[in-house]
Every structure is written in structure tokens, then in C-alpha cells.
Length: 355
Image 1 (cartoon, rainbow, N blue to C red):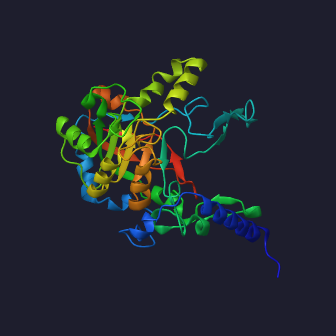
Image 2 (cartoon, rainbow, N blue to C red):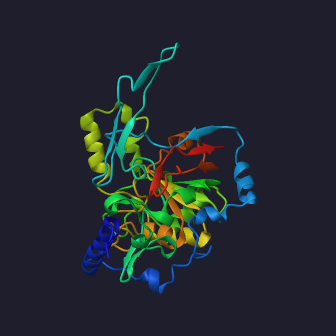
Image 3 (tube, one colour):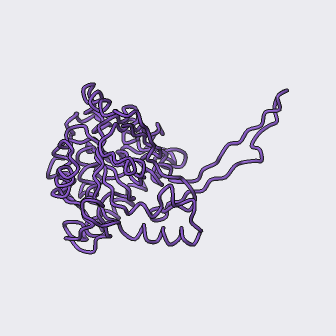
């Protein structure tokens, strides 16, 4: 019997993964705590946007009082801070790319990108981005195992995430009540420090969330809300500051920005799950406090697995809240639609806020 190259490559990858898993950290909480099936059934591929109802949308629309709009996405550019080995390069193929054509002598330009398109600058974490390594294999949202779900192309190369692809969430999109928690004003620190202990003020706890809601005079966080935190850490490469910086200043900013970050602690994220929110977001690259959280420094961005893998509550990173902060707005209509990139782990984009 002859086996295809794709099948052989897939089998080899599974064997290598099994060996690696035997030596790698294992977390069986998804199995022992029954993280699957989700509340929307074993076939769900969408998660929290399923909560959207006409009443929720109308409530969010009712927050638009002044007719003001802004976008809160960050710039995409080769020198912006990136996690680990990620890259972003852009070139214009041709000068021009094509033309002239026709009696009107039309010319045009395209662009060519080489990047982890869903995981740079302002980025949306979809179902295929974050999972847990268990004793029975990888566990992603709703119990999906990427080794089963991977779409494979020539030579067994993985070309998509199957049912974990972002296109299923993108088909729903997000229209919700947006809430901006101003941790800088609440804690009197700008920016919040990178946490170096479990009790660092750089960690935003459940108590902090409740305190900020009260201090800002906001109604309680509820089902279907999109909740964002401003830590000040992202200001180091704000849309206003970044274009004015030299390459040396940008290098220093990248080094500091990626050395750790303030953000949510696990108690805040468990509170969000209890309230059945739709999305978390912030001005950092993960929105999790790192390297220390409330449980110490032995956990890798634990809010990611707590919210995304367990509950299908998605995450939007590297946002620029300056339009909202300048306007003194903490409650608004939030709209976001990931790109329908088939099989992708996430999406770039430019969220719109209205108030």
C-alpha cells in the first residue's frame, strides 16, 4: 500500500509531537474540569459572539450620544514591537506594480507583506491561537485538537487551522457595549509597572476592576460587554509618538515594551468569565500581567487559557486608547470584525468606537 507524502508527513509530525509532549509541561485542567463541550454545543466554532442579541446591540447603539467616532488600532510598520521571532516586512512590487494601461494610461501599486498577519501590532486572538498541552494531546476551544483539525497542503505542510480558523468568529463579528477601565488614573501610576511580584500594582485584580467601575461611575459589567484596560504601558509606542521617534528610540522602546507588561490578573479574568463578557482588550501585547501574576511567575499568560480556551472569550491586543482618554469617554459603542482569513489563528484590524 502506498501512502501519500501528506499522510506520511502528518504521521511524522504527530510522532514528533508525542515525543515532545512526553517531555513538556502538562496541564490536565481542561480534562478534569470539563472545558468541553462549550455552552453552545460540541460543534461550536464561534464562542462569545454567540451571546450577541438585538437587545444588546440596541443598548450599545444607545451609548452614542454625541455622534463622535474614532479608531483605536495601532500602526503596522516594520519597527514596531513584536513578540519573540515575529516579523513584519512590506515591499511595493514594482515602480509601479503595473501599467500604464489603456488610453487613460492607468498605473497601479500593490504591496507584498511577509508577517504573522494575525499576531502583529493590533491583533485579535482567534480560536486557533491559544490552547493547553494535556496528557492526552493539545486542547483548544471546545475540545478541538489541532493535530486532528490541521488543514494540510503539499508535503504535509499545515496551511490552516480547520474548525479553529478565525473565519468562523469573523462571520459574526463584535458589536457591543465597550468599557474602558483606566487603571492609570485609578492607581495613580503612569504607566503601571511591569510586575516583579505577585502583589505588584502592575497587576489588575478583580477588586481593581470593581473599584474602577465604581470610581468611573459605570454600570456593572455584564453579559456581552467588551472590556478594555488602559495601563499606560502601550503609550511607549502610541500612534502619536511612534512616527516621531528615531530608529534608536524605537529600538529602546521595543526592548522595554517586550520585557514584560502590566495587565489583568487571574482573579479579574475569572470575574469576566462569570459575567459572560464577549471580549477583553488592552494597550499591551497580551493584556495579561507578566512575568508575575497573582499566582506568581510560573504561569504563561494564564488569562489567555482561562478566557479563550475555556470560555471562548476572545482577546484584542495592542490598542491605542488616546482618542477615548482625550474625550474622557469610558463607555461607548465598540465595533470590530476580524478579517475572514480562512484557517488563520487571528486577525489584524482597526477597531471603531462611537460615543
